[in-house]
Image 1 (cartoon, rainbow, N blue to C red):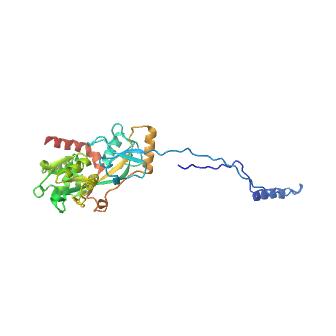
Image 2: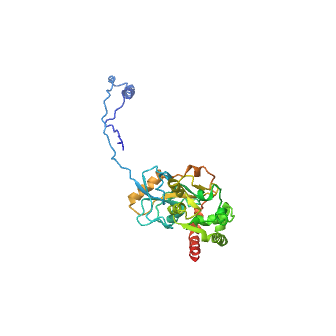
Image 3: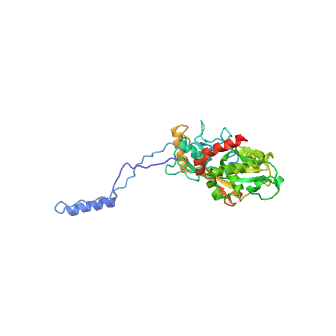
Length: 343
């Protein structure tokens, strides 16, 4: 860091012109006194300066916990600040993002971050920012969105363009299907396959009848379902041939492309879902470290990017409503868990 130099002159003097003008004015008012002596031209003297140097301050590097496979694909996260990205120690889905010993900054889907914000586990970053359907909260800053797509193995299905109704058509496309072991995303997809319009999804899920409708739709393909717990698990299931098709997040797509021929897998660009991701600061750690992390996120948060063919494709069919999940997530997770255990 360059040193800041602050010049402080130790002698202050009037210019010769200013001094002559003031002297002339005094002489003009003293006509009854002796004539004023001529003013000698002031000599300019070099001012002495004292150099004040600011101490050299090293910008800290902040460890950022990101979801699985984010670190495997460096192009996914654009670091515009001093960030070092790591993955969580546990790969299993957790309702809460904050765990014991969490790093100074965490990035996750907006629903889980907002849940932790409401529980008081996160620092407030923007107190004026309300909770919203897009998952923004007083405790977070947005970093981007992940696309979730219907992806299939082209070697087994060819170049056909599939929809969520095809996902349920076992007779036409026999084989396993991969879905996240979570009501979020899974219930939305089930209702889309059952003919519910995207704008009506959350009106439907807000009712007991709508929840039952989603679970009954999942019952239709229950014997063919393979559950994944995170993006790494999802990519492995498809790559190992354990499922013919599945709901895949962006990071799974990137890993599949990096480990196999890029043209092996296809996905439906007109059936995409989008999840908002945000960054937050846990209360764990020292106050100084937390304060620095909050300041860094306000100044220059990292950014999440997606592949160009996902970014330039059709707009998402559905953006996950994080506000809805904040209101109904607990009850839907319980209902979904009961459904899974009862079969």
